[in-house]
Image 1 (cartoon, helix red, strand yellow):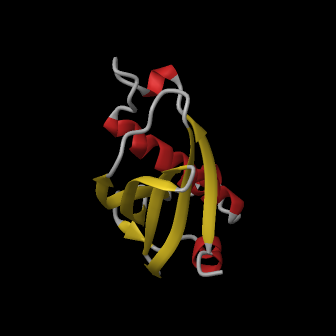
Image 2: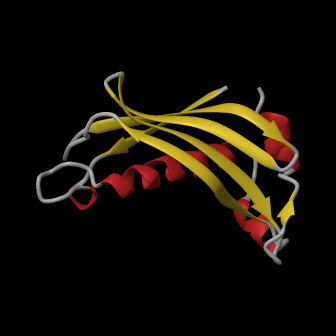
Length: 129
């Protein structure tokens, strides 16, 4: 399953040269993941009220080409693998089909005590479809 999320590059996303600041790619892919999780039926506020939160356990990122002020970007996210406690995604930021940034992201669920816990059933059930 693939998820697509559109992003417009605003002035606040760029450095003085009009190029997207490197850390903002992480914000773009986080927004895409949050939107996808909500579309899969996972209510993160309800989870938080039950003492469960998501955390990025690891990320491997490659910056391939710059995005610039005014660009229309698309974040493409794809489920790669999962276990009951881990969700691994491949995410790309693209401009008109050109891949600018890639990341492999591992997401885990944590209890209120900061201990690993099972991913929500909605995420485990829907992420492979």
